[in-house]
Image (cartoon, rainbow, N blue to C red; front, side, top):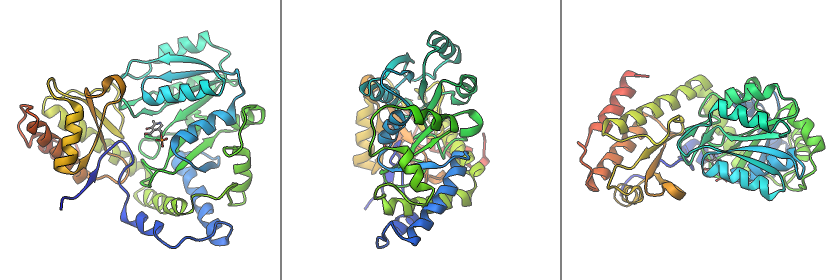
Amino acid sequence: MMKYYLMAPGPSMIPERILLEMSKPIIHHRTKAFESVIEIVRGQLKSVFQTKNDIVVLASVGSGGMEAALVNCFSAGDKVIAVNGGKFGERWSTQARKFGLNVVDLEVPWGEAVQIEKFSEVLAKNSDAKGVLCQACETSTGVSHPVQEMGEILKKKPSTLFLVDAITALGISDIKTDLWGLDVVVTGSQKAFMLPPGLAMVSMSDKAWAFNEKAGLPRFYFDFKEELKNLQKNQTHFTPAISLLQGLKIALEMMHEETLPKLFNRHKRLAYATREAMKAIGLELFSKSPADSITAVLSPPGIDGEKLVNLLSSKYNVTIIGGQDHVKGKIFRLGHMGYCGDFDVISLVAATEMALADLGYKNQVGEAAAKATEILHKGLI
Ligand SMILES: Cc1ncc(COP(=O)(O)O)c(C=O)c1O
């Protein structure tokens, strides 16, 4: 028997407390008992999203939340600027194009964050854009985009919405939805919220709700107005993912017990320890603006990142993920979000350095774990 570690950029590990809650016999959703679950979830989600507005919770994966955001805000032919610096930027851009939006791609080299000067330039050239789409964390590259600064710029543009995919950022980093002017924020259940995949959560600002009134794209299942009407009665439009919502209630309870400042700080420390551990064995980070949820590392010369991922799984029972598209085999990605603590990260970097040594990398096994341990022990940040 070998203990299993799920250290991917999502899904993330699920605490026993949540698993136990979700294993309870199912209840019906049109009952007072379930309404009280929604009532609690509604209130607590607002504080994690840092918004005064209700959060629409959909039975869907994150990509559904991204699609729902588009169809609830825009009409065919509307121009949107899509920050495209990785797999998920590309996905939102493609979704928007499929729905007939006029997409201007703001191409960003993989591994880099969008530059504010470049963003302002593209925005000035496309002053008729109705929306800007951007990832808070581009999971395929481990990059954190400057959504706070972008939000400040877009706050001054009443006819442009700012839509943020925060699927690997919300509940990990301090994302101030209302304060920063993030009109639509999308997240999913399988990352910071420590749940299985299956819930998408989307916040809408007052400005976004005003766009919703005029949005002409067809929608039926993903109709935010219908969802909001029901949510205000602590109900959902369709049959909700009942067990996941019960699990979400516990996840939110756990997040609030820890307190949000401590939760953000924990992710910062874990990310810092992971980065420094990788650097301590001579590795280079792929991301020039690293996120707190995942760490993307360049595979050293002569070592295939895919082989490393496979060996970590087959020999050490640790799941990490490799690169996608043109960085397949060239990078590997370590997840440290949600139900993840100091000793998970120490195990993660220890397993990584062992597998690297197995593949012929000339590292001194133990150095990465020692660096992470030192940082987490002394709180060097
Ligand atoms: C930044 C980002 N956007 C979108 C998605 C897509 O989410 P899902 O796989 O739940 O559809 C992911 C999933 O990893 C993600 O990390």
